[in-house]
Image 1 (cartoon, rainbow, N blue to C red):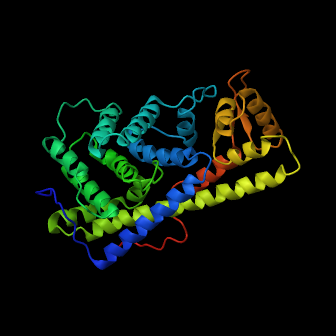
Image 2 (cartoon, rainbow, N blue to C red):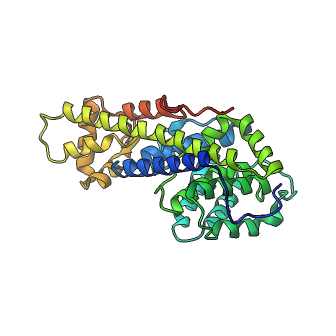
Image 3 (cartoon, one colour):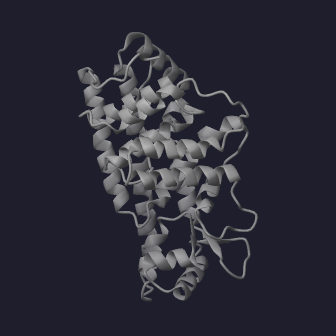
Length: 340
């Protein structure tokens, strides 16, 4: 375990280059995400991958649609997400909202409290690093003048090393998301850190141990930078495919001149599931008109009703779901970073 909380980070040129590239990729992703009618199409898959990693060892199976449904006021019949999934989404969303007004440390504590309720442990034993919690949270909120990726990697290293919370490892991806959002690098939780860690779990453990023993954090920082680069590329690829889907759909309705229908079809490419009230809100139209447009879209096989309800109908945008599931957790072909 590190003996102190460092206020500086010394890295070599290779690590600096990786940090710079990761920062650049974050900028590209945030800019691309801002052009989407609704960034939930990136947030939901990210949360799915993070919670899948977190709950897999606890015997909870997570479906991607459960995360998408969790944010809907009306769920399809028989499609209510597991309580733990709802608790996760609520805990993270609350932490993300709060970090805009408070500190990263306080927002992380909020998530830790919510996550504690997900644990099946009945032990009263305190986490090994509980006594270091306040000091660590203060460190997270201090202005150290570190490069963003360096601060994120160093904070994750200290969090994982000191383990101040129950199941601290579950909070690593939340900490990374909060830091990126607080600094303005991203506006939402759209980079799935846990995917990279899970894929290289043994390597992750080895480089952490080496960092603790030697105090050299170059390898650790490069690992986190590589994860950011990998997942940014993955999300950028998804954004590109969603844009292509939008263009194909617009071509299909080019002969339909009904007011609002083109805007509605353009918006469809940003949703896995949609309801009339949600479509009305995003397209600035009435709920009644939104229902009519959804009926037209169903006739064009762009959406499919989930369940059979007379009211509060929920529709799946099938092609969007296919693209999201196809891209979830993929390593982009352009990513040639190899871990030894």
